[in-house]
Length: 104
Image (cartoon, rainbow, N blue to C red; front, side, top):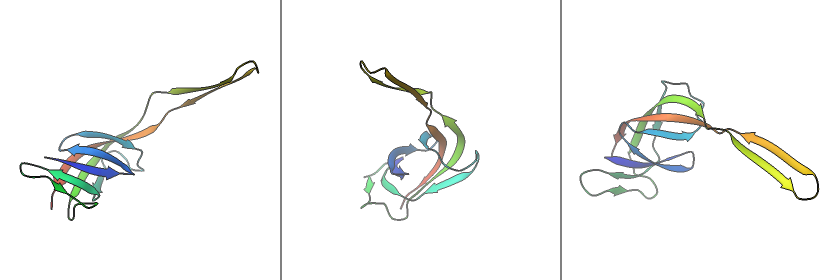
């Protein structure tokens, strides 16, 4: 069984036991999180598609940890002008472990 869930404006495929890498939450590791914006649930039978969300459906997850991506270097450059700028960026993410999918 899997569900398509919307988290912070992005869609993720959630299966029981799966680890999702989502944009940073202000939660500590071990905290439980519930999402009720479920777009689709698919199991043994026909899939249940919401319009836009499935009524009564929830996905529960546990925060595994807060992590950072590897550094991405941004390099700006204008030819023949002596203009060069280097900047680094590390995106913050939260790893979630899906515990359960409750269908309608």
